[in-house]
Image 1 (tube, one colour):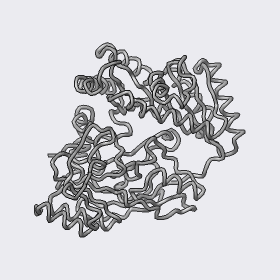
Image 2 (cartoon, one colour):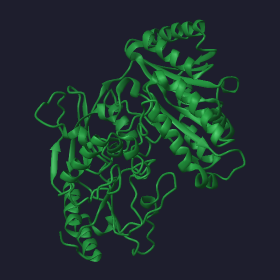
Image 3 (cartoon, rainbow, N blue to C red):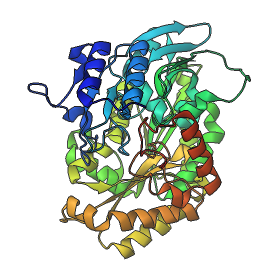
Image 4 (cartoon, helix red, strand yellow):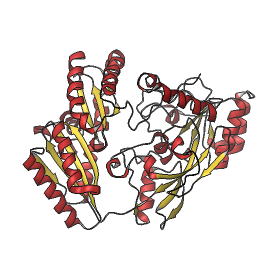
Amino acid sequence: MTDLPSHDLIAQLRQICGAAHVLTHDDPGADLSPWEQDWRKRVRGHALAVVRPANTPEVAAVVKACAAAGASIVPQGGNTGLVVGGVPDNSGTQIVLSMTRMNAVRAIDPANLTITVEAGCVLQNLQAAAENAGFLFPLSLGAEGSCTIGGNLGTNAGGTQVVRYGNTRELCLGLEVVNAQGEVWNGLTGLRKDNTGYDLRNLMIGSEGTLGIITAATMKLYPLPAAQLTAWAAVPSMQAAVDLLGLAHQRLGPGLTGFEVMNQFALGLVDKHYPQLRVPLWQDTPWCVLLENSDSENEAHARAQFEALLEAALEAGCVSDAVVAENLTQARGLWHIRESITLAQAEEGLNIKHDISIPVSRIPAFVAETDALLAREVPGVRMVDFGHLGDGNLHYNVQAPEGVDGQVFLRDNEERVNTLVFEQVARYDGSISAEHGVGELKVGKLPLYKDPTALAMMRAVKKALDPQNLLNPGRVINCP
């Protein structure tokens, strides 16, 4: 490895990508904050440069130049991550590799039910391209208007339809990746069966840019449903929500595409900060559930299924009241309420976020016990519990007591609250990261809750694929 002076590296990168697409702090009027500040505005790094390649050969050339210079690389998509995994550190020596110029839809194969897109393609644009071709791409999450498919793959994002379609990993058939040596692996196969060795695709997915840089992907498509219906139900307890989920699986089968749970305080924040959204049923119930039924036949069939489900749920006592959206506008309005919880929480002030997964059957006991533990240990905290109950993923967030400054609350309590929650997650055989990744925020916690043998294997993979530790160092796993 030859450590080149930074100005020589910058000159090389500008030769590769064009001067307009290599940004530094020395440029007149330069503002690198969109690439250096994380989405939650909790961390601000300092990059040597932001580089915006236009194609895979340019990515490969950038990686080779950085490897020769000994400069580490932080791949970045839409910069919507929540675990500080896509922004530079404060050293001023890292290159932020922004993938947003690589945003093309390369191909759609209707017979194979696949779409091939570049890593910088915004998720919403991928959804639209699929729909325009008469298909469904089911990955859906709150940041879909700005997050990119490369970032979704890098963190193995989940979203609201995992209960039917799985995480991003389950939606991917092939990848194109630039490795740490600047070599291109073209694995953009649309094959559903390929047993020719180690599964490199799944190794890259969820690795957060620490093993290779995803430049393109071949993703699965599905037929558009004939009908999609949405219902909003008030439930008396978390156990009732789990019981409703069981009924929904029985009555709707694979038609159940979404099942979200939200506690009263979370919905109260939406009502407080976005009163125009008109949150239904929230004031007289501790929990609400949002569920979606997709039907391959017709709307009448889907509505009949929903009505039968809700009637059975009312009789069983796991639902106290419910509404079914009468049209697409109403359905979108209900989903918009769910997706506004995070924004409303931000309006309320800084908070402690947890993205955890627990076996569905154990979630009621976990929530009851952990809520009580936090109330005892940190009096006055307000719990913002919501998430994807259908796949066991909760966003178990902790808001400061009323009138307490959020920044002070985090400073004084974040470490203690995290420890309490993570210890409870471990007791209930859960995971401290369900869909947001590990990033920098949880890299120090992983050795406490991950099997030691698994950690050793992960370090061995990292050292084998990235011996210089140049790809997003200090994220996912620490290597000396």
